[in-house]
Length: 279
Length: 300
Image (cartoon, rainbow over all chains, first blue to last red; front, top):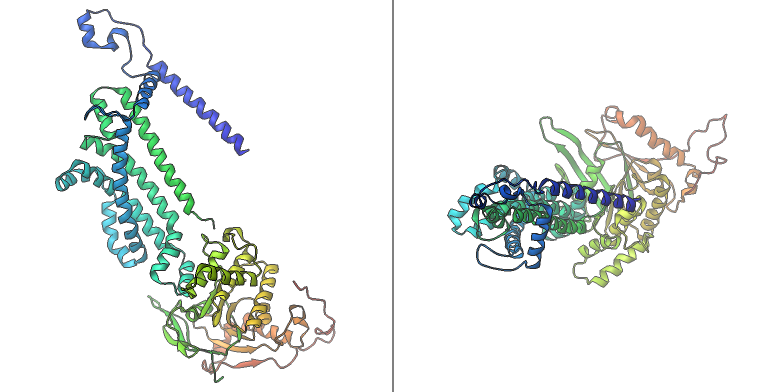
């Protein structure tokens, strides 16, 4: 029953994709009504005016271009022309670095907040104010203080991914079942060992949920951050191709951003499944 | 009562607030080594609080508890707790749960020694073969067995049980009571147990402590169990004093637990009266004698 459900869902998915691609293809097809104009004027106007070709690329154009990119993902023709693989690697590198720094700070701090009601109450107003700030609002401040655009992007990733992890860790740690803590207490397990053998495994699913939310936000923010700081990365690529008026490349970048985001999410979902325990 | 192994000395528990409530105060109780004591009382009378204080998980507002000559200052590996909700760590296997306790008690033991010791107690509670299962794969009775194995594995001086069988079905409860009784008799374990179940108390306990309703609960009586130490579940109801004992406890729970404090103004909490059931229940003449030809009790 589940297999057949999965199969039916796949058929519907493929059908919807086909409908979408078909509609896209039809919508961007050449209309063929070329205006009658002098050759010089036609050169200025471009293909849209001369051959009735839509400025929006069709799925076939995008597919052809994508194939070109996939064949040469790592070429480097200078600052404004790098392969998509290189751009994605730059973005992923920034995300990973900012994210790992956030993990290293949010999880221990979350433990502290979760275990100490005093710290929880004391830090709460700061967290409540800092959390809703758009990460990009930090950018000018980061650029001014760090004085390095690439590091500023990493800082922005850090600041946006730290909150969900911090809040989830604190919540997970604070809501570990009292009876499990009591088990550790009656066994005279010390604080340090208790944190690793009872609280960490008990809170791990909640912590992983926070980490999963964070990686999603980090990947959302990196595109915007790289549009601002420029230089390298998939966000910069999108903006650069917009300046080149290459809508095809913009669409390809959008597709890849989605795919990479999905892979990152799936990796954390997999890890999350490892630490989840049935009750 | 000169050599008290456990001595609860005038403990009180109050919750401060806009209206401060006294759960109980000036509570005294002694237990000798190897004794099985059951506390019976209605919900909210503070039984669990007494147990938590004995365990060191809770601190009394007043008074102290002395165990083996030492005042309790927090939880200890000498006092094992069997929780009502079994409280197994769900991410560990059966073996992992027991081994966690074993390695907490003997920190220097190597893995193999911890495992061997844990397996011995898993076998004792009849769970051999299930040691690699996780708690979620076990039935309620099996989970509680793991809880018992975990408590026994650290060879505690006292076992504290907080309604350990109340969440189980009747059949499983009976089997586990048998197991606990066998293990406790074999090892001479000192046990402090809380229960709601009169028959459970009669089957397991040497002494049954009756607690009045809270707030302001007191220990009303300590009822000595007249049944022999080597009692069998199937023969309980044949003992001439069984019904007298059972009726005494039920009378207390039904009516006297509410009115005890008002009826007994001169009750001295330091000298809780010990009740010895000395007579059989009066027999209704027009009916058959209750203690001879009664219908067979169904033993589990």
